[in-house]
Length: 343
Image 1 (cartoon, rainbow, N blue to C red):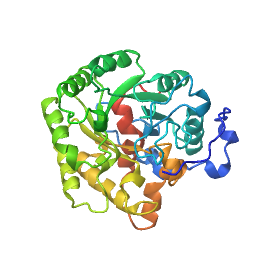
Image 2: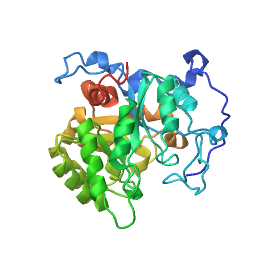
Image 3: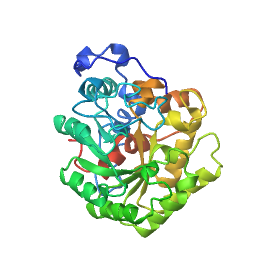
Image 4: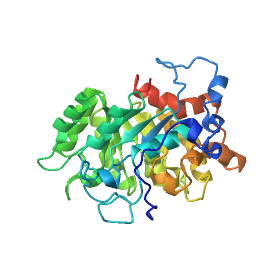
């Protein structure tokens, strides 16, 4: 992706009064107002959250703090191969965008440019109690952190999910190798969902994912970004495989990063229509909304990412999502999966 102009690391006020009115997104856009319409009690062991939660964001340190929080390398998918981030992604910018869009909390996924050094994400979560939950990055490298690192980070109480990036495994190794299985089992034991990142396509990895799901049924599983299944053809093999995973009750899907899976410009009508397929297969209680901040800022922008369904519906490109389904999608599912996280 093209790099953005660097934004000063001077702290930006997150006061709603300081945000331009044009940035204040009506909560009607993705269902907070619709929560009132969903007046029937949720058929769930836990009450549905009334908070709007972004289930997929990243943060990385500003360049000015890179000595304290060093970068480990390039980000997957970035145009630049250098260590400096291709666009700003530090916490104050995220907080500003969340405040303007009326978003109450988020799951921060450890970014690849900090690799297994979780200190920056940890500092952000600690500085903003009740605002963020962390998803740590699993380390499958020989002699690396493995299951022990998962235990250590989970013990902080700040990290409540694990990301499996299959491209970090040594060449020739698979996620189903010994360390992969140990990490998967440990995550299940600790109650940490494992989020899969099939960035280069679902089909090459579906065999490993299905094996891990079947062999470790106690581990909750999440497929990031629609499982990276492209939405231009909902009859494709990858979509068939994705929807077949719905038979496993422990599997969830993030309806996130629409720009990564859509073949159309904003409002990504094909992906908005694909969301209906996910809800029909998995149920709204196993689908959650995410933006993929800060990458989304180079696409439609953060506030507009929360208005995709309304914009697509207005353009005639999205099937209806009920008020109750939206309520689960934009906050209820995440709050139920990580109870007590966003107070």
